[in-house]
Length: 422
Image (cartoon, rainbow, N blue to C red):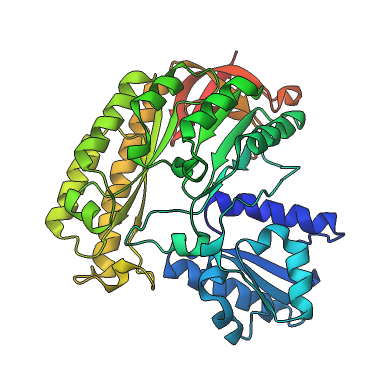
């Protein structure tokens, strides 16, 4: 469940077990173990996790259910009160899953250390991946204390992988013929803080010392995108013009109550600057609707600012109260119906912006990475451009899967782009 870091770590768990003679099976009925790498960003994700675990026990009463990830780290022993949970493993322990599981089975049913005491990055290695674009986790934890978010307490302090480890992992991915790497973490903009460096130091080292042709950055706080970083990225041959800004609101009053330390004016300027510096960059963002105390007027300000912004797409979701956060105890909580209504308004703004963005790309010739698998419906090759657009081509030539090519984007149908392979 959850974020790209969790997806990476789930692949680490799978590979670790397979190296210890476990076999992944497709049905719960055939399995000895059911392992859930959980997310706890909202109470809804908690409920979904419990549903999945309960369902596994219902389908196979002999199965051993193991919960790990962020719920496990937050709730700990309390989870064992549920008869559908057998073993609980912490966020750090899951990265050496086989040993954590076997030790726990023999003993206490729970294996969780104090994540807040973790001082160094756990160097989890992933040797193989099935996807076209490889994910590489470069950082863990978060030092911010946003009032809506429990994740710092599930992930601990910000911890950075050192440059040599990252370069070695990239070289390993290169040996496996990957053409693109996505840097992931809980808060990658904080990379280097704990080791006396900045994210830009890493980006420069990657540019100079690796041969993989394309890189993407995960989500960044607007304050972390400096002029120096934009100057570097605009001249980079490897880093893609793809930005994801963690915005959360477009109203200064709401941002203050969220403990977000930037203003709407600042990040609108950042968005404008990025659009001027790069040629058709993709600019995504996150927005939470209905945070505690958000009035109709506050939301109207957010709506207006998002409409005039140069964003390409907006991922929005209604605020969900999370026990243990400052936001959970704030006055003037917004009712669910209002939150949902506001989210629907932002989704419509996002749909219009994305439509405009893809139309802006029609007629352009772009480099794109042909994915390892053709389009399921048509059998035609598809790939992703540097500015994060998926394009379905006019070719079925499977000999060029997983290669970089040029495509002329010719049309858009139902928000899908089509193009001619050059």
